[in-house]
Length: 217
Ligand SMILES: Cc1cc2nc3c(=O)[nH]c(=O)nc-3n(C[C@H](O)[C@H](O)[C@H](O)COP(=O)(O)O)c2cc1C
Image (cartoon, rainbow, N blue to C red; front, side, top):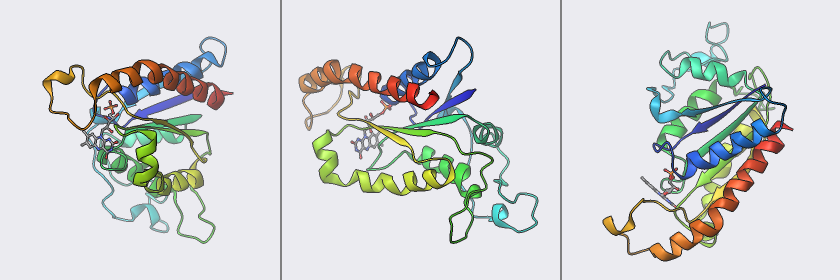
């Protein structure tokens, strides 16, 4: 079985990537050695465009019906992902939503599968378990006040129609820099952030691991 994690952060070993890695560790641990293959894909390594609204994916009888017609470095990746046994998406929050790179990725992955009918039918070759890991600078309490949940839900509903409703994990109050003394940062206290990271981040990683186990089980 093949499971993928997709990292929508430009940083390859920070908060989002670490949680994704923990989830993949959980997936591998859930089956006998070698049975659950995993791969972490960094979107910022791939050169691709967002949807161009060409509608070739909706053209009846067209050769790209149900598929994205754009040919670039993302094309073979989309093909592999559509045949996966499970997908875990991960993104930092940028201005209350997922990163632009990740949004462009979803336009390409999901829009071609969505049929314009009243049943919201899907042309995806298979349904599969999914999960979404979000990391952000703000705290859980601030997130509740700032409406992020509603911002993120639109995409989660669409993922649900195409593959399955994603399990969600939030990583709040993330530690952003290796050395806070080098950056202007008055809004948040570094000692509070460091204490939260030391106490909470290992627990978040454990949750991500469990999420992986559940996905593979
Ligand atoms: C361009 C930009 C915009 C951001 N916007 C937000 C935001 O709206 N809310 C928030 O809580 N954090 C915001 N952040 C912080 C990141 O979401 C947070 O540091 C995240 O954990 C980074 O993930 P990474 O360590 O995997 O790169 C922003 C960071 C950047 C670079």
